[in-house]
Image (cartoon, rainbow, N blue to C red; front, side, top):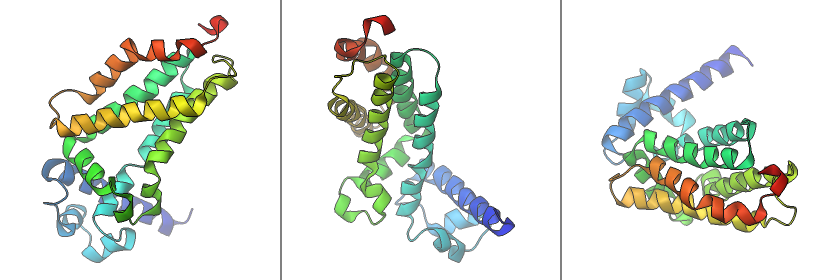
Length: 203
């Protein structure tokens, strides 16, 4: 990678970091491009080199980290249920730590796919469902889950759970912990949901 490309990646990273901090505090509506660039010590024009509009910052923040969470979950030692629980709880915990305002902005800007300009964000829900599918398929491939496990149906159901929890947390104004709510689900309901598909010799 050339020095120019490295510098460009660093600038983009700085813009994302500054935007994340400001949006967490003020919300996207009350955040200006000028505030973001001022915090980074760059011009407004530099911002538009990387993003078409400020909403794209929120979208960009939602991508790479969740892929990293998925990959880390797949590398976890231990049985399938531990890996799946790690993925779901870490997913929720990251959203909560990023803050309610940032999550609300993301939901507001993606709830109507027709208004999303970035093609990657039109597919965000499917990307997360595919990650959940990858977690379950990994259990089948390792022999921890039965061959007839309904991978797609379970992945969609668990994605619905985590997205539903996220929306309820948003609507509550962060009145409780999203991460703890997911932990409770994984402790109380997930084992019963997955039990019919767990191979006995893998328990």
